Each structure stands twice: as structure tokens, then as C-alpha cells.
Image (cartoon, rainbow, N blue to C red):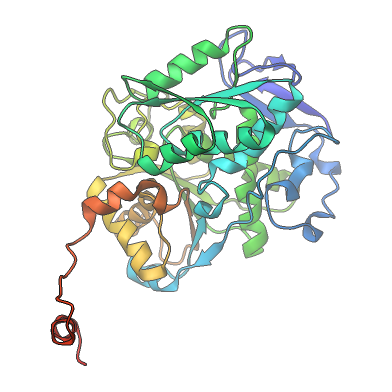
Length: 408
């Protein structure tokens, strides 16, 4: 199969065998394209375990490469009947990416990205992160035997995610700034000779791994839903999902594609603002603040492709408030037993809002992609949880407490 690495702005082709993150001619983002998908043999897919590498014919890694894997992908697609009823939908599924090895969807991109890092002869890797990226890169670089550097905004990363990066052995660099500052610094560092290989979503190989969530949904449902809803921060995931959908159609495995709906937090919503105003540019959020730390990003790298994905699919980008996110997090957990981090719960909050506004029809089969495990960000739960009920260590005291809630 023939792959090309092309600039999304000017179309300039770049060498897949070199380190390239943005176009050397115009500075645009790069995208990997497959030119001969019609002749692709996918007959072996059904015999392989569900996961990222089931679809290796669509991944731009050479045959015989040393694949760095922790068993990523193959996450559950859970039909949520009780929650669907509460939200006013006939069919709702949750694709729970928190079931990945490090607890987030980032593992899909890292297995491909770190594998590529080895092929390029890199001795070290790096990223800027709000949490999940650092945890995932640290794990996969440890698996590969690569040195790992992660740059984080001081005081703005959930403790559970930081703990992962630390225990996996990454070198943590804290800066007095936000994620956008950290991203600017690692992109600048990546341009220098001998620097670590950059594995944020500006790296096109990350997008390739993340697109496989789309293939899994199609295989698990045996069709595509009418609507896919996902959180939007740096916007790599919605970019990847739309790329995967277009490839399914090119393979003849899908005709009508779903609408893509991206959800941002109200105070960190430059893409949603641009979508609603019909703009072809974004105004970065100077002080992005939200309890959903994974999407606390004011200047998303993939904003242009996110806007295109929403518009080309007939979808939209919406915002939700932190209070709505916390309510949705508890709703998903208490109704369906699925505990996700706040950024993931934004999808449920978004569906609730859009059904009420008649922007999602109750008959439209909907899949929410939840991107991270709730145990990664326990501080948010502590903030929102009601007080526990105290009882003395006696039968009478316990029975009195129980009697307040139910008949015994």
C-alpha cells in the first residue's frame, strides 16, 4: 500500500521516513493519506482480536516493524438503555475508551506513534499534556525502552494522571503557564536537532492510531450509528474519527456517514464559538478554565480539521457548563455503572442538551465516545459528591439510617 504525507493547507508532500510535524513550506498540519484503498485486502480482519492492530493494513507502519503494544483498543461498546430513556433517546451506546491500558483513548495513538519513533531511530520522546497524553506516552515509551519527557502546566493536571506519568518513569517538566504555553514550547523544541520525538496530536501518526475507534464501532454494531458524540480539546480525536469514517466509505464498508458532534466546555470553547458564528478561524481562549481538565485547552492545534469534520458530516460543535458535566458524570455512573472523567461526561451532557433543543432526534441511534476513566480525576468527584451519612457502630444506629431511605 502506498502512503503519502501531505500538508492539509498547500498539498506539499513530505517524506514519511523523516521527522515531520508541520509543513516545511507553509507551516500547515500534515496528514497521512492512502492512495490505493480499493485494492486493499481486509479479509483477515474478522479473524483477528478486536483492537488497534486488527486494522494494521490501514496503519502506516512497515511490515516487520517492532510493534509497541500494551493491548490497546477493543474497548466496550455498551448499550445504555436506562440512560437512553432518561435522555429521551431510543438507542444510546457508550464506547468506553477508559478501558484502554492506561485508562484513556490516547493509547490508540501512542501504540502507532511510539512504534514509528523506534522506526525513526529516536532515543527519546516528548509531549505537552493536560494529563492523559503524559500517562499514555510514559507507559508506551517505557515499553519501548525510550526516555520520556512530559511538559505539564503546574497545578492544572489531575493527580491520578500525573501519578501515572511518574510511576512509568517519565521526566516531568512543570511550567508556570497553561497547556497552550507547554504546547508552544515542545513544538519549538522539536524543531531542534537531536531533540526528542514529539508525540502530541500534531504528529500525524497519533491520528492514525486514534482513527481505529471508528472501525471498532462499525464492527461492534455491524453498522454505523446516525450520530457520534465526543469531547473536543486539542481536537485530535474528532479529526481522527472523521478520517476513519472517510476511509470506511472509501473501502466500501459504509455509505451514509454519521453526524459528528463535538462538545467543549463553556470557558474553553474556541472551536464551538467559531462554528456557531460561521467563522473559518478561531479566537483562542486566553484563560481556559473548566473542571474537565482533559479539554482545558484554549488554542487547539487541530481546530481547522475539527470544524471541517463537524461541517462536512452535517454535525456541530456545542458547549456545556461545568455543572452540566458533573451532573452527567454522576448520571452515567448511577444509571449504567460507567465511571468516566469529567471531559468524557461532557458527551452525555451534550446529548442531554441537544435532545432538549431538538438538535438530536430521539430516533437517531447515538454513540458517545467517553475518552478517559473516572479514577484518573477523583478530585472532581470529591468536589461534587454529597456528604456521607454517619452512623454509630450499633445495629440500632445503622437500622435508623436505612429506615430514612427505604422500608425494612
